[in-house]
Image 1 (spheres, rainbow, N blue to C red):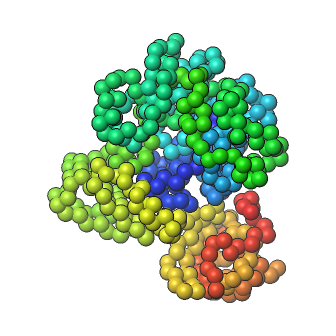
Image 2 (image 1 turned 120 degrees about the vertical axis):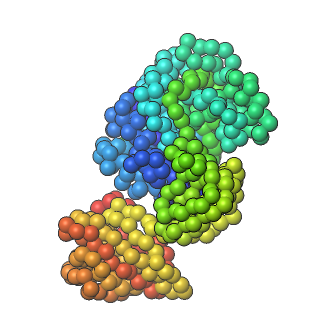
Image 3 (image 1 turned 45 degrees about the vertical axis):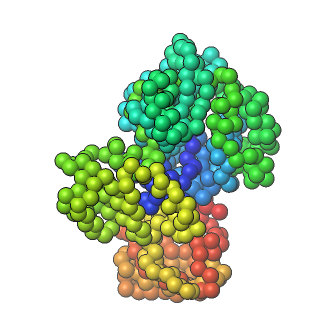
Amino acid sequence: MKGIILAGGSGSRLWPLSRDMYPKQLLTLDGETSLLQSTFKRLQTLISADNILSVTNVKHFSDVKLQLNKIDAENVALAEPIGKNTAPAIACSLEYFRQKNTEDDIVIIVPSDHLIKDTEAFLETVKEGMDLAEDGYIVTFGIKPSYPETGYGYIKTSGNLKSGYKVEKFVEKPDRETAEKYLEDGNYFWNGGIFMAKISVLLNEFAAYAPDIYSNLKYLDFSNTAKIDYSVYENMPSISIDYAIMEKSSKIALVKLKSDWNDLGSWQSLYDVKGKDANGNVLTGKVVTDNVKNSFIYSQKELVAVSGLEDIILVETEDAIMACKRNQSQDVKNLYDKLKESDTTKLHKTVFRPWGYYTCMNSGEGYLTKTICVLPKQKLSIQSHNYRSEHWVVLEGRALVILNDKEYTVEAGGSIDIPVKAIHSLQNPYDNELKIIEVQMGSYISEDDIIRYNDIYGRA
C-alpha cells in the first residue's frame, strides 16, 4: 500500500495563528505534534515511511521535511513549484509511484490538516474500503453529518455495496436551509477529502477526464529528484480533484468513516474539539475573564482580559488581534483576503527554520531588527546579501562566524559586522543555544535577498 499526504494550503480561516508561510498543518493545535506529523504517524500504522509521499508547495518544503524527519528520516516529500490545487498535485504523486513500478498497488490520499484521534477506528474504515478499491472503485471516506454544516462539501449516496455505498453525486457547500435538508435526508455525507484506489485506476480516470493534466505526466522524471519540473507543471490547469475526477467518474464508492474527524477549518471547529471550563470557555495563554461564557480566547504573548461577553472568538498573536462571533468564524477568511498583501498573512513575527528560529522586533525605512536563536550543533547557510549589511550582537552562548573564508569566535557581549556582499555564515557547533540580535541595514530589506553557496538543509 502507498500513501499520499496533501500538505499544501494556507489555513486562512485560522488566521492569525495560521499564516501563508506557516499554515495550519504545520501548527501544533491539539496534542504534542503538528497536524502534519499526526497524519504521517497515522499512515505509518499501515504503510512504511518510504512509501508515504508528502506533496507540498516549494515554499513549505523545508518545513515539511524538517517536521517529518523528526518522525522518520525515510519519508519522501515532493515539491510542487507553484500552487495548482489538488488534482495536479495528486496526479504528479501518482506518476511518482508509477515510475517506481507500483501502479497495481492501492494508494490512500489524505489531507495533512485533519484531526483524527481514534486511529484504530480509522484503520478499520481503511480495511473496509480496501475491498472496494481492489474491485476497481475509487473509495471516498464520508462523515455522517451531526449538524447542518455549511462549510463542507457533501456526497450523496444511492444504494449499498458490499462494504459501503454507491455515490450518486458530489454537491457544493450548501446554504443553511439546504444543509438542513441534507441532514434530514439521511443519504448525504460530509466530504472529508480522503480517497483510496488502485494507482492504475486513478491514472486511468485522469486520462479519461483530465487529459490536460495526464498528458503532461510523461514529461516528469523522478529518477533523481523529488521536485516537479516547473516547465511541466505550469501547463497543467489549477483544479481540485473533486472537479477534475470525482464529480465525473462512475467508479466512486463511499465508506462511512468510523472514527472521529474534524478538519479544523475554522476557530469554531477548534473550539469544538477542545476541553471546556465550567463556563464553556476554551482559554489558552495569559487570559483573565469575568462573566464570560462559551468563548474561545487565545493569547500567544500578552495578557488578554475579557469581561461580560459570550460566544466570541478572540485570538492574540505577536503582531495581530482577531475577534469575531463564534458562529461566524468561517468569515475570518474574508478578513484574511482583505489583508492578503500585508505581512500579517504571510509570516509570523517568529519564524521557524531548520536551524532554529528568528523573531522580528522592529523595522523601518532601511532597517530591520531581529533576535535569532541557533540551536546546538546547527548552522545557517553560507550566504551573502546584495543590498544589506548586518550587525550581530551575541546575547547568549558563543557564535562561530564564517566571514570571507575566515573564522571568528564571538562570545556573549561581543559583536561583529557583516558588510554588503560578504560571504558569511552564523554557526553554533556548541552544546548550548546561541542567541543574537541582528540589525539589518540597506536599500532593500527582504528575505529573498539571500544567495546561498552551501546549505546542510538542502535549500536552494
